[in-house]
Image (cartoon, rainbow, N blue to C red):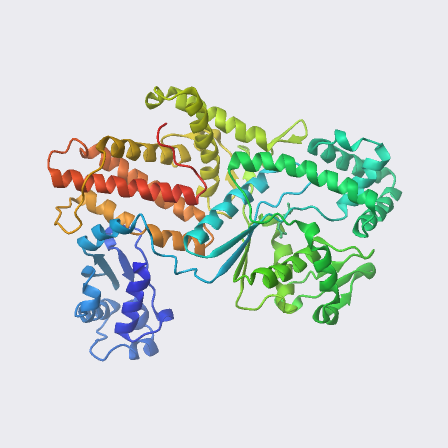
Length: 580
Ligand code: ARG
């Protein structure tokens, strides 16, 4: 990508190290295509300045230094091959403007990006979705599913080997309670549903408040489950199967699938091995009431991680440690991303710290917890899709499809769509709207759930992006095939140039969105691209342009916008529709 190449060239011309210098994309196109603040940095840093080539003069201000650096750089053939202009802006920014033919030439590669080098040979494991069995699929797990999938696609695009693992919550002492309740209430296993299971768990806890002995019974059953008792296993298996069937329906609606659905239960043996690990045993201490813990004070974490409860049962954290051990061994991960909500911040701090302390994860491997925010309702409370005590996410998704259908049936362009096609498009637009609304918010922020914004055709929404894509599609379809000669000279007007310059940064934005774990950066980019394209479309004739070369350039630009939108939406997990 050119930002990297520019950086390499600057570093070598100026005799610096990569860390000395940053190359950014200015927020405002008036400040060029790239900018660096190296003059400001070097002016205040003797050591840095002394390493610059002798011909560069410091002058009296960062601005003077910037001017001197700029005229030094202008002499480089290497650089000026693709840079058309270098400009210095107060108080000392050096801004680079790309040559027009570089911008146009870029269009050639839009179709076959060759940027697979960034991630070559590296592996990212993404832990996402991860709902709990015997409970309804919550809106929090929806966030995790949508963001996790987008991160998956971002890293894949960059050439990483990506492994998506749905870490189901299918193990733990709560299953002791559930088994206990199922046995005591004598229900037939065939009649169970996720709703029913959730009710039974609540019911158990209600009863256990009155009769504390029930908790002992639950512990007894979890122990049996862990020991492989056939009756306990059978009940647990049934709960798991029923839940997965329900989750599968949601994944199908969302168009999401996973490489692995291992779940917490998978790590039984791995936990046994972990508990025998020498380093773990060395670090294990006696906690309250005979629990076994690992202290993490040296990481600034006051709460120790509990490895074994006082009754000897393993914990959620034990399973996460065992799981990390497995992921390192099996996948040799370079990055492990946990797409999980903010409420588990302490848990992941503990797990990450313990995994370093025990040498499970080497220092150079990145462990990242996304800490996504909550959905809130209009009054600022935690959004819940609970109706009469039942969380039903499926209803929310179906509602989105229904609302999308209303929009599509009312749109002028949908008149010649068959009713089957309308159904299909409504599903893509409705689900796309939900996904986009989630992704356009920064991951850590809370989101106020608002149907009007989710489905708005005017604002920063999924339907708006899809509509713009459909517009490019229709122009290109009407145009049929057209010629474009990259070698010939084009007259490019201001708005065309602005679009060209904007499109140029597409891949760099993808890289940034991946490295900062922030799909919202890609959303911002695509939204602005649509705005730019739509105002261009309103201002200039494309198909009706009589000048052949102008028409070709405009069609080429439309094609570029179309390609970028399709790829960008695809990365966000949203299907582009050709007509709506
Ligand atoms: N099942 C958990 C929950 O719903 C999320 C699991 C996240 N992943 C993990 N490796 N702990 O809270």
